[in-house]
Length: 505
Ligand code: ARE
Ligand code: CA
Image (cartoon, rainbow, N blue to C red; front, side, top):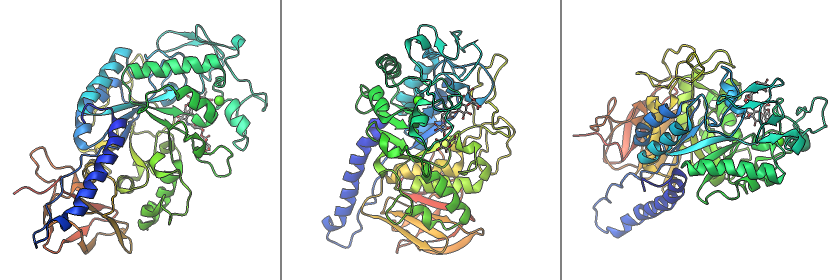
């Protein structure tokens, strides 16, 4: 299982998980006496991704072993192709060529990252910018030295060969209204030269770029700005990818917009932006039970079908806006991420970026503009003091790491899944494999609660994953003979127990 790409692992695990769930469900009937059924094994299910925004290839390679140990299955990287020069975070979204040569590292470093991560059992999903090239009105030179002009990329694209759209629908050819599907797809997104993705030469070259990424061992792509290409274009460009390759389209759900995320399901999976936006309001309000209903039939919003939806608390765009939570929300953000990881709607992507005040600010760079390798300092977490440009390392916050481990150990919700609600306290059970309780109150809440777990002492992984020798972080939680635990759930916090983290001794 370890050497499989993450995408395949995720789907294979679903089958395995169901088998295990079936097994536990059957075992009480099989043992007819008063004896207890065996405590189930943790599953080692790894569908959780982590977006390491603006992390260099070397830094990701170095992080992969610990990501694997925590329970992450794959990493989403920033776009790897040659891009315009400049310090802002968004230069990677203006491609100059498809050479894998960027301020995040060289082709060799990219390839080394992919194999180091594969060896650790972590897949690499990379961001692919296919809809457009640069938005620069003046000619320039890219990171790897390629010359370019707004509509002329020597040896690649040129206006004279009809490689670009000039939509003629708005005064400057920029998208002016998202109510027009034609504008969204054929006009320019913030002045970015829009490729004629319906034409054979453009599709062919973009397919070659994706094939190159496959040859480097990547296990999936995020299709940047998929909304700005027709579903037929996205399908055609991704059609020849390996069957188990993960394709996740970025199609931001917009109320009243004619372009719908659902249209892109033929090409693969899609990010469900509404989930994180709705979650933000729920967590701020404290009625956490609503978070468990998101995406279910009781939930009010219409979302993508669960199996094709990737959800997130925030991403690199939304953390710079006001529609979702971000690391700046501290404990609420940690709580939201835990709820996402415990959700049985969609599959989660944890976000990890750098601290910023200025929304344009790029990550820490050297004098030439190469991004410095990220490192997570000691003591990361919701209370950490952060200076501009510090790596926030949300993926390594103790409670987030712990709940990633929880999700990996309990696997997808099966027939033995349960939820219970008491005011602003909600508990999520996964049969005998795990249990998690979250507190929407602004003060610590003492409770005696049924866990569904076998009696014993469990580590509270919301305080952090157990140490390498298995020692709990913080006090273990005792589950009594009746399966109850007596605990005080921290304000806007949680307690999480699972069979993969039993207290020693
Ligand atoms: C930068 C400057 C611009 C300048 C341009 C060209 O900010 O002023 O005109 O360069 O020189 C990122 C940054 C942009 C940046 C761009 C290129 O966010 O600021 O422009 O890189 O460097 C829409 C799209 C969605 C897109 C968001 C941002 O539908 O696809 O806008 N998201 C992706 C990435 C971004 C990236 C791009 C696409 C471009 O995640 O990081 O841009 O590659 C409603 C609609 C949404 C719409 C949203 C915002 O919610 O429903 O569809 O999202 O409004 O307009
Ligand atoms: Ca387009």
